[in-house]
Length: 430
Image 1 (cartoon, one colour):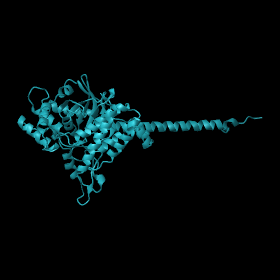
Image 2 (cartoon, rainbow, N blue to C red):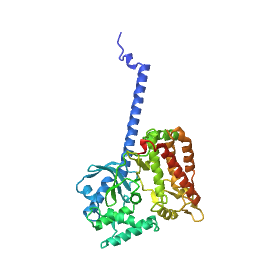
Image 3 (cartoon, rainbow, N blue to C red):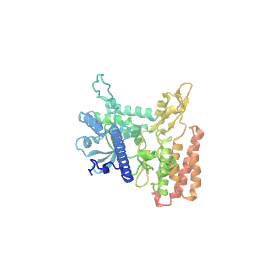
């Protein structure tokens, strides 16, 4: 019998095992491709965000160019631009116009902050204008005497914190002492320009106002409007950082609990909390007028190894006079349009479509809200009930009337006394 030209085995139907293996293989390839695609997209987004936010190289280049041309000078200029002993480390920038980096300066660890202008955006077909000198360093002008510069500083401080403050002259003298960066007894024009640029920054002003209270990190040096602050060892006040893809799936209640997992012992938390309450006290009708705390989130604060509170970001702690001036110019349709910073909210005057100057919540109410979960977690049973009562009374504070201010002072003192009595006899209070 003749053999068939094709073996029937060639046309055999695939077995169940072979079909299952092929399906599993395709599924593996699909999910592998999907993982590579998603991973590449995340890397691209993160890298794009990093390059857009972190412009430390551009900042250093701009500052050093002005230093070498004799426009600015300061105690950090030579180390940054000539000797390379001041270097920028890890980027912590959240706003491209305000660069924040960890850094080293010889044996010192610090935080370097640098102000950046908006990146220019050019349309195709438009003529690019020649680059102009930034107006940040155009004051004081050549020929200005030290006495005239002191007068400029005095007028600026009066405009910022009010002209009825008795200690303005002493504050102006402190500014002049800082301006003499090389300690030669003379203030050069480049040194004066750097100091004037720093004076425009809320954070620098608050550092001056609170320099004897130790709530703000010490100023280590400056060059133009780049300045170096001492490093705060522990930050933020509480909370853990998670990848955004996990944040989406975690319920808000669980997320708040997770933020309190990695915090110091309760006595140490009490000391840190007292520090925040003292900060509120110092900026509320203090020696140099009132300041409004317009970002009282945990990320704004840190603490030292001795558990002393430090302000990490003071850009939104603003003089009340400046706040009132700015918010009154704000157009609005609803109250939500009258938000300054993260949490300074006023109301909208619908007859004028302008924001009113009175904040809806005082500094203390916002500070207590930030502290509530933090200080109640692990609180001793003999103080917990009274502490919770005082915190909720504090959070309920509204407005800024004279009666509210009396209640404000009473609650503030009660909270400080309650916490301090509990830890004053322990080594944790030192």
